[in-house]
Length: 313
Picture 1: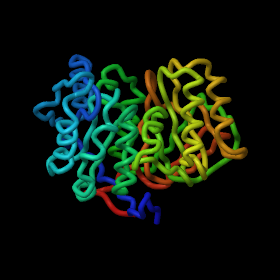
Picture 2: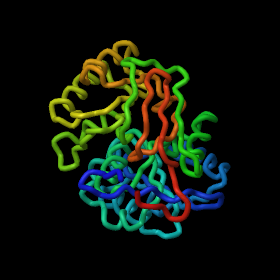
Picture 3: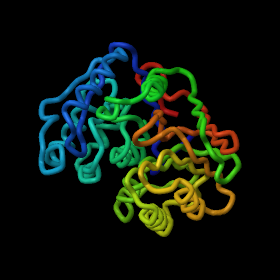
Picture 4: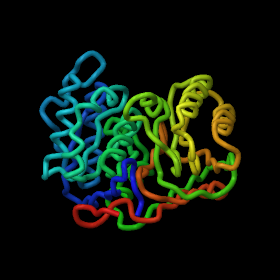
């Protein structure tokens, strides 16, 4: 048995089928309506229905409505039995602000696919830790607007497939060679760093840690990793996988910073097709996998979704 933080049993959601309804929420920033509609069209072209709640387009400064409004939207989507999965309109900022307003008991009682990335990393991490529910590092709706074929195929494979996923980094680089086994965790570096010193600070021991980011200078990447290391949440990381660091400076500089942030011998794979502005393959967070840095492979041990309404491991 794999156990999440606080000994919650891991829960794998049920697989989606053509015609299932995906609920849309906006737990963070406001978003562009045109890109949103384009992203919804992509979902519908894949055979899904969508549920767009009243108030999705609300605005309060740079946020998609008040904290109470955004949290209530997410709580209601989890409670809605007709909704089989939940996707986020956009990341940006704001997920951290609603954590104390989420009904984790109700979320745990209504397990379903919850997907997003960037600022949504906060929710992906905390929902798993609080409930044991596997979450999905995946495109948000506005990112689907101009996503490539590989991104769409990756989403379908992760939410509908009965086969264990194998993700290949075609342009992968073994920054530190080796293999490691662990629970896949992580996501956007800046969003993970936001949780340091809060009651929601993650623990990545025995994990395969995914990291990606956008528009962060190398010294800020260094600062965030240093803070996380000093806070202890990087202790015992089994392996590291780097997605895209878009507009963050030279790749070799970022790679060197990451190498220096983990103990010698921890396998580190660079070049995973995950992150902003490019292929963004969907990765389940909370499932055990094997990282083979030498061959650029991430191999999950069980399917990303299960038949029926999901199962406890």
